[in-house]
Every structure is written in C-alpha cells, then in structure tokens.
Length: 179
Image (tube, rainbow, N blue to C red; front, top):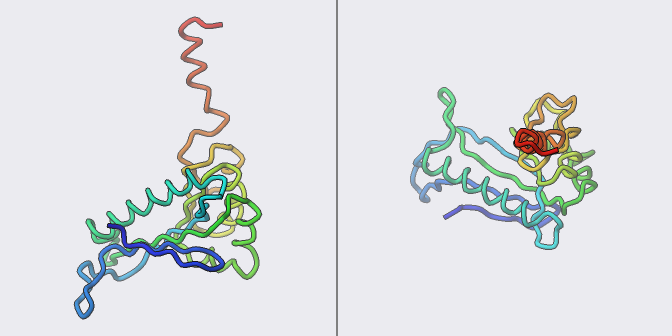
C-alpha cells in the first residue's frame, strides 16, 4: 500500500516516504537524505486535466513507493536518499502555476531537487520558464509543443515534439504509395 497523505491548504502536498520505521525502532533502510520531486498537477476532479494528471501522480507515487520500499531508496556513494513527492494544485491553469512559482512562493522552486512537468503543453509552457531559472532538471511526460523546450537546457520531455508527431506515419503512408 502507498504511504501518502494529502494536506489541504493553499496547495496540496503528497508525501511518499515508503518504508516507515516502527516507533522506537531504527529506520530499516537507513535513509540519510531526501530527494524531493516536485510538480504542479490538477488534484481535484473538476480540474480540466484531472483525468490524465491524477494518473501521472499515481504512477509517480507507485514508482517512488517501489524505490523507497523495495530498493530502500536511491543510493549514491555513501548517501541513501528516500524519494518524496510534492504535488501542488494547479487547477489546470497556467496562471495558477505562475502564481505558485512567483514572488514569495519562489521557495517552492528551492525546496525541490527535481521537477516533473504537469500534464499538457499549456501547463508545461507556464512551468518551464520558472524551472529554467534554477539549475535543476524538469522532465515532462505531458508536453509535445516544441516551444516548451526551446532555449531551456534543463527542461526535457518524453513525448515526441509536436513538429515531429506525424513525420513517421506520413513517411510510412508515402512509402506504401499514397499520394
């Protein structure tokens, strides 16, 4: 079972710790550090991109839980990192993302070690400029618009760029003799 919690307030936080030490006993994985993955995501059913966004959150929670419980974290040299996921409510709105990561809320950028892009090119277009002001990496599983990645050396995507989406099917159909 996932060990997560959602905290209501200005933004929601999902924290995945994984292996929990029994009170009074030592941590079985001996975590020495924490690796914080952070992302704005639609966390309420009425949000436009909730269906896809909630699936992304669930997938990342499963991976983090597996890494924390089955692998006892991420091991780098003598350090042993647990993974913690922080998901911030974006209401499927780029203006909300701008508000989260501007001004006094800029500490949200400092608190994370690594960023996961939200679902949709529109939301990634709002988030990527904020991440690119840091020396941290963002990987997006939900943006295909080429402009999200232009001139941003630390922002990456897992989808083919929109300018390339139809290149292979068109070449295949043409090779079959279509005109």
